[in-house]
Length: 251
Ligand SMILES: C[S@@+](CC[C@H](N)C(=O)[O-])C[C@H]1O[C@@H](n2cnc3c(N)ncnc32)[C@H](O)[C@@H]1O
Image (cartoon, rainbow, N blue to C red; front, side, top):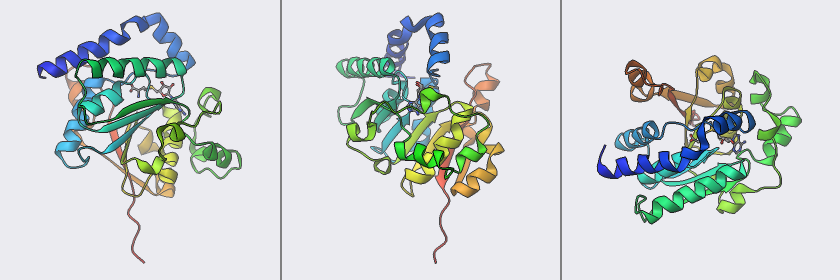
């Protein structure tokens, strides 16, 4: 880790320091916010860029951006990173954090980063869900809590001036019950060559059938399977699944 990275992680930690344990627990209950380890995410982005599985300057969307750590480290890795977050307080924090990082010269000038308020699942998705036209709904162990199913009139894609198909890649640190809807979102709205990086527990393995129906396949890179960190006794242990659309046979 070089000097810039040390400054980056110190600043990320410092700007969230006031969240504290009590507030954090409340957040977990209220909105499901728990930050993914930014160091692990940055390593993952560098690794995927190094392997050519992400393109420098590619456009990434963090689905549920929290306080903006993933957007920040993706930008540091040279990706044009945006985030959508349903909790307005977290959006405010993320924006403040990104502004601070920019003012300290920690983000490359050429990359753009925005965190906007709203639900990353389009309204149309919930309509399909209600009408029983959603594949994921048949595999959800538990329904999504109302706070994640509410739109409040926000149009985050409009605010970003983008569509889900505008993004090359997505990141999501999801709770177990969200993984089916995130996968279906990706299957329905992402473009054919997009990638979804999803840090999650073993849910994808339990949902092979659903993934087949959604036309998705996944890999877990040995470098990103969490084992390395588990072995070092760290809490950084989630695998990062890499979902892609199954190539359609030429007809
Ligand atoms: C586990 S946290 C991860 C935060 C961030 N990606 C990180 O790793 O630091 C998940 C976040 O997703 C947000 N969220 C959950 N469902 C959402 C939805 N449908 N639309 C927008 N944000 C959502 C929650 O409010 C929470 O902040």
